[in-house]
Length: 173
Image (cartoon, rainbow, N blue to C red):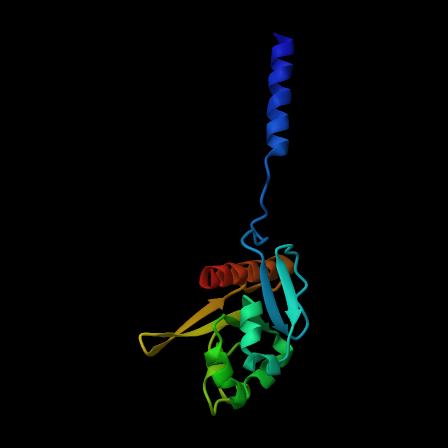
């Protein structure tokens, strides 16, 4: 009886230890290649490959064929609001994300509006944008991502990126 019980416990331990535990903070979807204007985020995701790009790359059709999404980091937001890029953002066939923008997508997708000229519109850590053309009309999609409990820490930032990657996967595939 003791041997059977020990064997049963051993099997249970083996099954539990072999069961893959997924970290909810880690993106587990398709492999993605994400262009980054600025420094690549320091996050832990094996399925994400970051590729440094510049604003000049936005004008190229090749960039959208080789990337699943684009992220513009906080240090480039004031440059990103330049009117010359508005049409580039609208023409992208992949989503673009503005990290730590307190102005949503408004200064980036509207001519004559600068980052400093409008008040903060939200408490979010990131805003996503994609403009598509359906039946001859433009359709804008936006996403906003807030930190849990409005606390900026490693886990909450990882969670934001995981949600962004899930959005990219949903929109792109």
